[in-house]
Every structure is written in structure tokens, then in C-alpha cells.
Length: 295
Length: 284
Image (tube, rainbow over all chains, first blue to last red):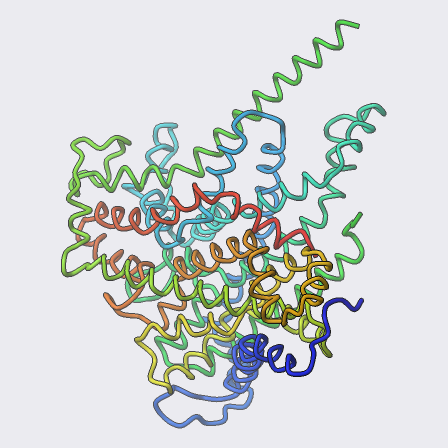
């Protein structure tokens, strides 16, 4: 498919000019950075003294250093709950908002609000809501006769953090699904109704299969976001000495590089993160070819 | 004939009712943190944990305290605004330049280059953060706003993709007609493509501004100390102080002011938000 204009003579210069920022970004910002991070991951460097060759030391640490393995385990646990959570919750909200009822635009605005506000600002409120003795959630639970729960303690922290992250992501997911839902032709449902299919059958036989492109796209975005989730987790799990009650890989990268000056170890963790995300993307695209329905 | 009609109407009525109950319950969860933020920001510090939604007595002192020398909220606000504004300018300019070339100009390696650009979408920011930090450290730019602004001027996969998709919907005849009239590539870009792509540019402007305004990780790395930093880092920093000092109310006032401008813009520019997300998601 060849489309577009052929540049004439001196216009080739302008093509290069228009592309230049992007080419610089690709060369330095993206490819160069990735290569540099790979190189750094094989070194010991604190940025004060000269770097030394570390060989595979940093990669061995990924599997042997308990802080590193814990961070990876937490990230995987978090993603495994967060990604399906976002997809299902957003689909549920979108299905409700897709019905011809009054006030749809109003509800859509309310559900989208967390998506436009900074995680830092809203996490401050969530801290107040989750507080054990003074928190709003325990106050409401107490009214219902439930014993106070320590939401931000180790046994519940992942649950608490996942809830807030899903809360913040529903808005975007909902919009993606609403766009997907409007693209499904109405006559499919009319034909199904004539054939006597009930609501559940219509959902599983028509809506869900035809929404697979949206599900695929949101799963992709949610996965990338899950492995980079930082703001809410940083704000909700920070403890006195700068450590975290739920350290994820991104937190560990930050702490290793900027608190412990272990740039080599942090780089190895960044590469670990990138490899896992790349493998998951490959897996998703394989699934896409088998299961996603494009009209 | 009459009976099934009535039962169908009844079932429609019941399912509408259930929809409303679920939507209202959901909306309560989605908005409660915001209501609580507003409510707490008007409470006296002594009443910071009170569970009433209407503050009694109500006070504006929390907002006044934001202007104190220690907190210096106006400075944080200005920093966030300046960085977000320049990031937006950089993204609009450089992404639209590249997007125009990818959408309207034929050249060798175009598809290869575009695919390469799309692949970079999947690189986690953490991977580029460490070498970028080292680069900026050697350029003695840590502690300045430049490391947060400059990268916005070397394009970006997301913005380029978004604008290219929109540019592709501009009819081919426009290009040919402009060519016949003797317009150069740059004129076509500036006079035809940019004005026609206003909705997509608005969407990208919103995404860029919000992304920069709400970013925490990058300012934490490049501008770690108050007050020469952004609102997000400032709020995170004050969290520990304020909680110990029993002034959650001041913190809530700060949080409220930090989100207010963007929430207001969102109420007026909802269409751009929603179309922008749909635009990036649907057209592949």
C-alpha cells in the first residue's frame, strides 16, 4: 500500500527536518537507552566511582536477593489481580452505561473523574479512608457491625492497593468498551431476539465475541500499566524509613538506584521488567490471532 | 396480544431500576474520595477525622496555610504548570511533524520506521529512566526542569500514532489539489493538515498536559527537593509532615487545589477526552 506524496528535490531536506526530533528520540531516548540499560546491568556503578565489570552478578541477584525476588513476586501478584479486575469492572460499568437510560453522560463523567486526577492527590484521601482507627471505611463497616480491619497492614495491603488502582483505571476502560459496544450493529440483537435468545445468551454469543478487540486492547494497556504501577503504591505503602510494605519492582528499582546507588542492580531489574512485559505482549498477540474477532 | 406487551414493559422497568441502583452505588464509590477531600479541606485541624460530610464549623484557614513560606504552594503550582505547558507544546509540535510525514509522504523505510516507533510504546519507562538520569547528571541538569521538558521535544510513539491515525482520515484529494496549486510539503503540513486535525491535536494536548501534571516518578528523580519541584512531589513530601503534625486538613486543601484546574478543564472538554481515548483504541 503506497500512499502519500513523493518529496520533490529539496523537499527531502524538509522530510528529514520534520522527522528529526522523532529520529533523535528513537536513537537516544528509546534504542540508546535500552542498550545503555543493558550495558549498565552488567556493571557495578554508584556514579561516584568508576564503573567496574560485574558480569552476571546483578542477574544472579535477581533470583537470590530476597528483596528482589519479593518485589518481582509482588508485581506478578498485583498484575494477576489488577488486569482481570480492570477488564471485568470496566466491562460491567460500560454494559450498564450502554443501556438507553437517562443521565448516561452524567454518570460517565463521574466514573471518569479518577482518571483525570493525580494519583498522588487522591491517594492522600485513600490513606484517610483506609486508616485503621480513624478511617472512613472502618467507620462505615462498624456501623454495619463489622470489626475494624487494618487495611494497610501486610496481610491486606495488596488488596487495598489493587482496589485503588482499579478505581483509578475504570474510567479509561469504560470508554474503550463503550466505543467497542457502539460499533456492534443493532440488527444482531434484533435478529437474536426474534430467534428467542435471552439476555445472557445475547451477551455471551454476540456482545462478548464482538468485543474481543476492545478486551484485547484494554488487557494490553492494563498489563503495561500494571507492571509500571507506582504512584498509588508509593503513596499508600510508604513507611518511615523510606521502605514499603508492598514493594513492587518499580519501587525496588527506584530504591536501589536513588537510595542505595546500586545503578547496576536497578538496571538488571528494569531489564527483567521489560523482558516479562515483552513476553506477555508476545503471548497476547498469539492469543489475538487465535481468539480475537475482527469484523 | 396485550399480555406479553405489558410483561415486556414491566421487565424493562425492572432492569432500568436495577441499572440505576448499580450505577448510583458505583458512582458513590467513584466520587466518595473527592467528596471527602472537599469536606476535609474545610474542616478545622482538630476535626480532621470527624465523619460528618458538611464541616461544622467550616474554615478557609487550610487554604491560607498553603501560602505559608514552608509550604510555598504557589511555587509548586507554577512549576507544575510551566513543565506541563512546555511538555504539551513539545509533544504537539514534534509528534505532529512526524505524524504528517508518516501519513502523507512516501519514502523508503517508512513502514519499518513506523513499526519501530510503535515497538517503543512497550518499553517500560523504568528502562529508559536510569540512562537518562545519568545523561542529565553529566550535563549538570539534575535539579532543573529541563530533564522533564526536553524529552517532550523528541517526539513520542503515542502522540505520533494518535495524530497519524487522524491524518490518514484526511482525503487524498486535499493533498493532490494542494500539490497542483504548487504548495510545498511544509505548507501542506502547516496550512492544511494541522488545521484539519484540531480534534486530535486537542486530545493529544490534554493527554500530554495531564500526563505531565500528574507524573510522580520523573519529578521525584529529577527534582527531588521542595519547593523547587512539582505539586505531586510536594504533596508526597508534605504527607509525612502533615500527618505527624495533625494537619490532614491542610494536605486535603493542597490536594484539592492541585486537581481543581484539571477537573474544571475536564468538565468543559469531555468530548476531546473521550474521543481521544476512542481514537487511540479503535482504529488500528
